[in-house]
Amino acid sequence: FLGRADDQVKVRGYRVALGEIAQRLRQLEGLRDAHVRVDERGQLIAYALIAKGVQIDGESLRAQLGESLPDYMVPSHVLTLDAFPLTANGKLDHSALPTPQVISQQFEAPHEGVEASLAALWEKALNVEAVGRHDNFFTLGGDSILSLQIIARARRQGIRLTPKQLFEKQTIAELAQVAVLSEAKPAAAPIVAAVAPRDFALTPIQARFFALPMAQRSHWNQSLLLDLPQALDVAVLQQALALLLAQHDSLRLSFHQGDDGQWLQRYRDSENAERVLWTCELTREEDLASLSDE
Image 1: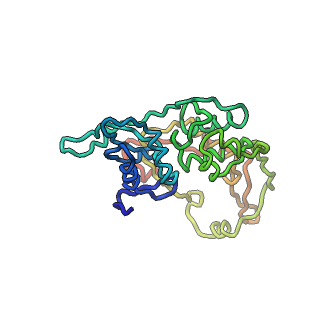
Image 2: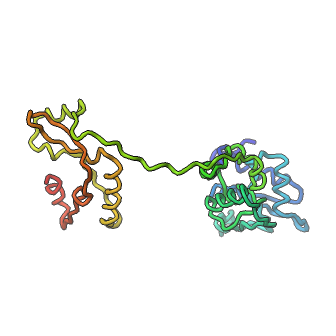
Image 3: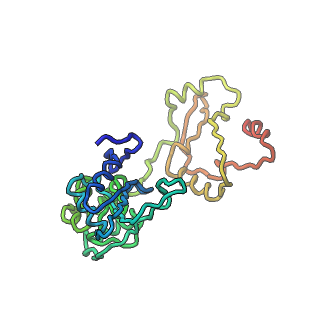
């Protein structure tokens, strides 16, 4: 099948021609026409026009497509219509096409243990209220990126899976059978900062900096001007900065000149975020340049 280049999309990492899927649908018995699109979640949605007097549902059409198309080309939903919505010019009105409702036809709650844990991960990642053990991951809105997130979160809970397993075993019940259990990854132990010597020598690049003649050695920085849509909360910013100062020793470095004239550096035991974070309000933008030189 040779389709138009602008009719090709990427689904689960594969390049798919929407026209090819629509053509396969038109070849099925009882259908007059078909249209396939990709929704905002990256799912394939098909619309099929049913011939007069024919009784057939979307799931039956999905099953028939699955016999001739690879899994990634089978639409997540096939909606049957009597007629396509048209614009005043007689063209397909894409905005008027119905949106599929994600409803579990035969909900069966996940079993306790691995299934329940996986279902909770799916619910959070897919933003759905409840996941049954036979619900399809991709039908619920899953994609390759979400699958990687779920696999990473499952690993932290001691459930080992691979992307291939999730693509092949697309329900909780199937996936639980191939999951490998291991010990849950413990929370990272708090990092204890090593006790650094009080004074220590400069690095070569630091020594070069202090060897250069400079009028205002303490005024040496890189500036960045950000245009924000709303004012920052100074108190929250100070809290975040205080955590950074406590975590990263290099942010608490200070420099002083010894009796022999040599520059040395040391870590401050603590640093006040209020001293580091300087706030000032200006009424005129032209005053910004002079303020930056203070």
